[in-house]
Amino acid sequence: MSILERVLVPTQLLGDSGWPTVTSDPTGLVLFDIEYTPQQIVSMQPAFGEPTGLVISPTVDIHTHIDKAFVVDEVGPAEGNLFSAIDRMRECHERSTSDEIEQRMENSLRLAYQAGTRAMRTHLDWPTADCPRSIAVFQSKREAWLGRVDLQGVSLTSLDILANPVIGDQIASQVEQAGLILGCFVYRNSDLTRKLQAVFELAKRYRLALDFHVDEGLDDDAVGLWAIASLKSVNQFDGSVVCSHACSLSVQDDQQAIDTLRACVDSGVELISLPTTNLYLQGDWQGTPIERGITRLKEARIVGLHPCMATDNVQDAFYPYGDYDLMATFSLGLLAAHLSPIHRWFDTITLNPARIMGLSWDGLIAPGSPADFMVFEAKRGGDLMTDAGRRRKIIRRGVPL
Image (tube, rainbow, N blue to C red; front, side, top):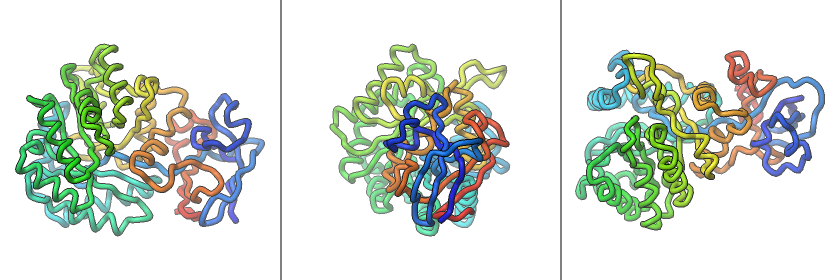
């Protein structure tokens, strides 16, 4: 039997523990002694005294691109130009070998594992009807890393291509065979509703979940999120639908943005915020940017959504920095979106993405849960906003990495 003595646990991750202090503690953090075996948490007893650290469950990174990470020195950063970044990465995709893709994925997974991530969803560029070479590499990595970093894969195709009746059907059929999620990039497309309807029909035909890049820009007429939420309801589509970015919500008027978020609640569309890429890529590059692109996380929570934050790009044309430490992204998102108090937002990188991905463990910390922990040196929630407070020990199956 091992023990973590006097560690703070966010009340948000305790679930229905039955401890009176869980609901009354004003800091949102409760001090425990946690006894565990390699298999599971055995007991959690209220503790007293000075905390030795802060514990959360391992993070879940629901939006990444591990097929094209670490290429920024080759392609260059596309400062403030989304479509330049897309073009650069398309060219990179076309010339990349399977060995190069394998190395990128391996590096990404190793860094994520060392940082404490237990599961990831990665998008895989799929620009034509032909199955890209990255899919076979992904499948081998999914098997090799199972139990360390559990992987889900999403095809990534532009809406105009995926809505083509012949090409779309070829892609969706291969996506189903590969055990992936059907993904799509949507931004101010002409004939938007008809094309999105074609994507929903593909998902229904092949029984696929959907994952969209949507409204990734600062144009207030980008309404892909609204259209997707509406079509999910109209089609009575009961599969999972995830939408990431939604930058245009930040520049739309309050009523329009709230109406869109409520449509997501009503239809069951999930919202993912990607602070690093959107803060870097969106906004003016000729002067100090005023509009920054991070989506409306506070309003999403108020209307009843359970949003997530995720890493997105790492060291490529879209975002030239980063290293798959989701805690760094989380800290930046808290600051940029003025999310306070901190203990109300731990679910964005643990519980919420675990639920959306359908993982076997919801991420709650309670007796019977896996003995998997991230133990930070932080002695209070705000310490996680510092490098020192984010220093951590990763415990998996009861054993420190």
